[in-house]
Length: 300
Ligand SMILES: [Zn+2]
Image (cartoon, rainbow, N blue to C red):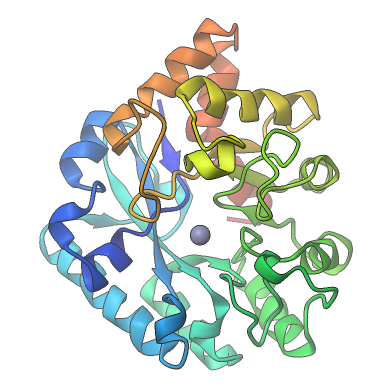
């Protein structure tokens, strides 16, 4: 079974913290049966707000080291293959491009295949969910988005504010995605998606990866594998079947549901879904197939 995880901060962990603490290891990925792990070039915490490109490049150097160690890079999710571990680059925080289309091309050249438009800061493209705000996608943002569309690079709306989200739904030429977001109906975290957003994402042909962070899964910050599956259930009830998968956020979160401490635990999710009566086809979709199908819709 193809398993894809659409967000983790392993490169940030390796570049700015103790690499030994990263749970995203070849060993864990193999144990969990992961075929495609997306690795984010994260723009960095507020301390690094003035040097986001440098931060991203430091993380890219960590990525190069992993490749030197034998990690295999995927240049599209369509390269995901059962029984093999591949890693694909994304950006989390569009400020690493400084509003420049040339920088977008540069990162595309490194193999970046997904762009998180914002992290928790306002940038040249738009504004974060973190501070609400009514401003949608900015003119400079549309210039980047038009080029992203040409390159078939999806816009990742995790961390983006609602105004920006609806701009993408209404005006962008390709369906957006959310690489690591949960359902607000079940947990009122500011970054989670409303029912309306989830319905729109599905109707538009987009895709959502459910985050493993207990603070996004449950109001009391206590979550189990069952809590995570409740979010999948909820999205399915809203009609998002075929548009939902996994976006762990490993190395970006301090706690996880019991059993999901590392990617090695991913099969527990599929066991729980099976227990809940999900047909094998749906489980395969959630595990990774539907994520690949989303890229096919983008023209890959
Ligand atoms: Zn994030």
